[in-house]
Image (cartoon, rainbow, N blue to C red; front, side, top):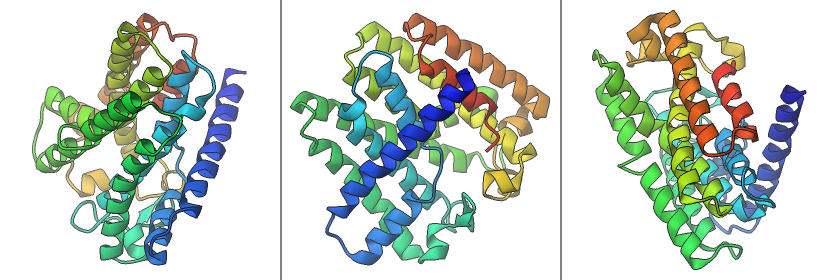
Amino acid sequence: MAHKRLQAYLTYYQEELEKAYTSCFNKLEIPGNLKQSMLYSLDAGGKRLRPILLFASYEAYGQDVQKAMSSAIALEMIHTYSLIHDDLPAMDDDDYRRGMLTNHKKFDEATAILAGDALLTYSFELILNDPLLTADEKVTLTRELTACSGPKGMVGGQILDMEAEKQSVSLEAMEEIHALKTGELIRFAIFAGAYLANATEEQVRYLEKYAYYLGLIFQVQDDILDVSGEEEKLGKRVGSDELNEKSTYPKLLGLEGAIAQKEKYVQQAYENLKLAGAEDSLLKALTDYFSERDH
């Protein structure tokens, strides 16, 4: 029953999010090829897990997630921009993403770079123009999103990840890389939802600790799937981490060790979720989903 409830929740909010960003783009007057490139990657599917985490965090403390919609769209745009740039020849040099040609293969490298740039900058405009948010909320959300996605967050993690290629790194160093590269956007999702729903400072503090472990869970499972997943389900080639000589959990700990480490993170995530008073929310089911996903 819980599994069916979660699947229904995922499907519902995936559809709501797509309706909302499509409405935004219908009103956006920009060069046609740029819009096509931006929408191509946004429409490429994906599970929309980051915005759905934002909605679930909001609903743990409040109702009517419409107030959180612009933040959720902005977050998905930034995630999408990062994937477009990750796939470029200068980065991971991937030809496929989610079973479709990567943006630079569908269009060209210059268009892909500009589409990523446009998604990043438009995300902040969406939040700042949202009539449902107060001035203080706009400032707080924009400040947090820039921090999570910029040099102190995702981008900082990306450079550390690149520098760790062909290197032997410790577990602590790997956790630092992925807490930034993967975890910071997840932290924003959890923070933004709870903040907009007026959670207490103490609740937000525990939720941010929860988000830290959730980001690590996501990354460990990603690394595991790159070793043992099915290419058809993943929508990209298996073994690309090994090919690019990246530092991964299975490489450091072995496959069984990576699975054991993931379980430690799951328990720590549960503990902080309980301390935040959200153990009965859908965030717990989403934690299990992150840990057990097969694509």
